[in-house]
Amino acid sequence: MTEELEVKAAEQQTEARPSAGKVLAEARERLGLSVAEVAHQLRLSSRQIEALEADDPTSLPGKTFMRGFLRNYARLLQLDPEPLLALCQPEPSQIQPIAVPMGKIEFGGKRRLMPFGDHSGKPWAKQAAIIGVAVLALSWGVVEFFQRQPTHQNAAVKSAGETTMVLSLPQAESPVQTAPVTDQAAGPTPAAAPVAPATVEAPVPSAPPLADVGGQRLQFAFDSDAWVEVKDGSGKVIFNQLNPKGSQQSVRGNPPLSLVIGNASHVRLTYNDKPVDLAPHTRVDVARLTIE
Figure 1 (cartoon, rainbow, N blue to C red):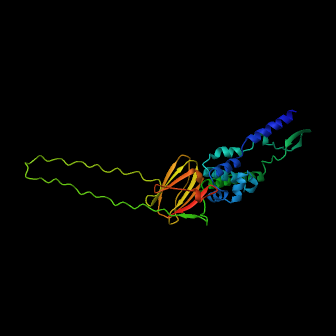
Figure 2 (cartoon, rainbow, N blue to C red):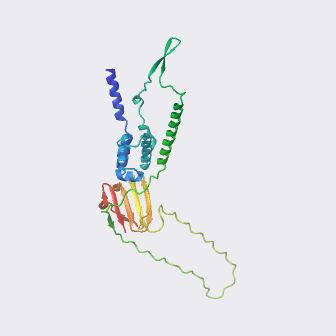
Figure 3 (cartoon, helix red, strand yellow):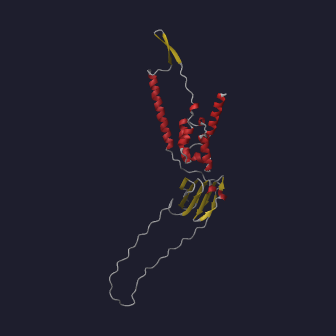
């Protein structure tokens, strides 16, 4: 009876403990990103991303590589990787002791038990220790390499069915120039004391926009976490990042401007202060459109 209760308690504890792959999958779906988009960002295959989300280390090069992939995946989704790495550690109840075979050796007619495999004095044991240290150093270098890989690159490829929207641009207003006013005397006046020239204050420069200066202006308001990528007319990526809930972004660029917006139902877009409806351009909560 006691053993059955212990087994049930262990099963309940295992079910209550979420897996790292499940946390990553839920965060990705919440941001409106597909497996292919995440694989492109991390320079991995879609099969490896699915293996991470399924907590399947057998489809990955090894546990060391899995931890490096998981750390980069968490940073891409703006999650703290340390709690996820802790979820990958086996629980103390899952660690099985290793049995060491014992042998009998006689000393002065008496038999004593000693473990086999204690051959530290042999040359091959020293070589095995050196090889083990080299393997650990190589594994650490591989993990560091993957941690330094860039996490923000092109999020998606423009689909063939991408729509194009043309908005009329407001005409630039010609600047109004004012002629200097000079005081003319109606007649001769008595000499007066010289007047000190008025000091002219230098204009205060305005704060630069958040993205490239020049071109047309895009403004984003985020009601939830959302990914945005913007390319200018030359195909250059001028804006590409994950934006937190409640934030706003302003981007300037030369048209035509190509946009990819994840979690589009929670993003409000204006183009030169004119609202843009994202619904006609949205599929699976990802909007793709070109503004000319």
